Image 1 (spheres, rainbow, N blue to C red):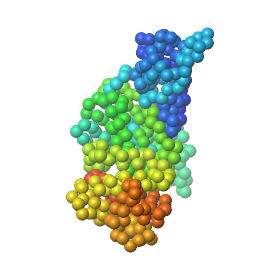
Image 2: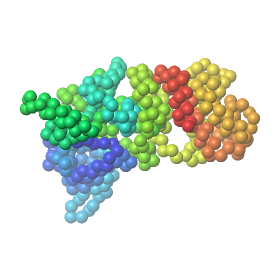
Image 3: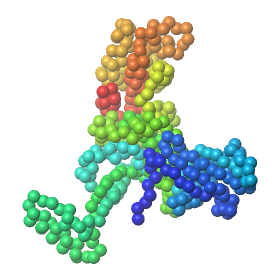
Image 4: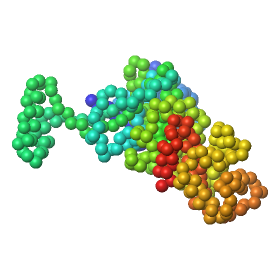
Length: 439
């Protein structure tokens, strides 16, 4: 039996009937659920039932594909449109947080684990063009254990049965060799009527996340979001949980679509196809166990940084370039405090500690076109000019928007480098990360 996939990157539309609970199925209304990553989850409704509540945390329903579902709100229909005809109706559209496909659930339903992957996960672990070199593994490929959770990397594959047409699939330069192979295989298959021969079509990687304690859908999705945000930093592209399945302690499972809204430019970047070999960090260059455990400890301090990767658009205005420089210089000053060099060298000491030759040279080259001041002085001056009204605008009038964008991106790499150091990366790998992104 083929299990229906619900990908975060696809568009879905369902017609259904919706009600508060199984006990109140007579009090219901028709509606349409639409999903895409840009617009999120939206319920269009037409409520003619006068007794239907104005507010509710969840709605349950039956979709036009025959599946049970639960819509996780909250919902407030008090601000909907009203028709005062022969029948009094409330109508409109309502955004909501999650669509649970497969079961009627209660508000704050508890889950134990989740299956999910993310965009470009296959390429992160292994080059897609060489995937036939990888043997399918039914067991655990990687396992990361923390006090509150366990994360496993596993394989999944799609296959076709070639038991009865194997003869047609073998071609050899020496026809006698092909005949020998076909004869041998057929003899082996004939030994038992239960024998079959399967050909692997695809091989993929996915995560199994398991929480120590049962948690609700919001907490579960927050954990998946944390995991995917780290891979966004590793690969330097937007990354979001995809094809999410939540599993309860009794092993029953449901499919999930989350109502997050994302810009079209971000979605386009997330759908891009980076090469395994050109990724700033891929599976071969990271200790997943150490990095993921430490990331969960550090996430709250780096949440703003992670969102710059997850919601990247590759589009900048002068205003955003100014803002980025102020933000990253504030981060760099915090790094100086962290490494104990703030009093004398609040901007330059983190650069001296983490920057590769290429990064330092790139920053210095931008300022050398306008003055002969040292890098620390220029960074201090540009922050003062951008952040404080009334300061003489010497650098601001000499630099253009491309300069500001380049300065911000290079400063961002220093902030990321400090994070990578905390995640267990050595300086050689940090410099390799910088050089790939500078190029």
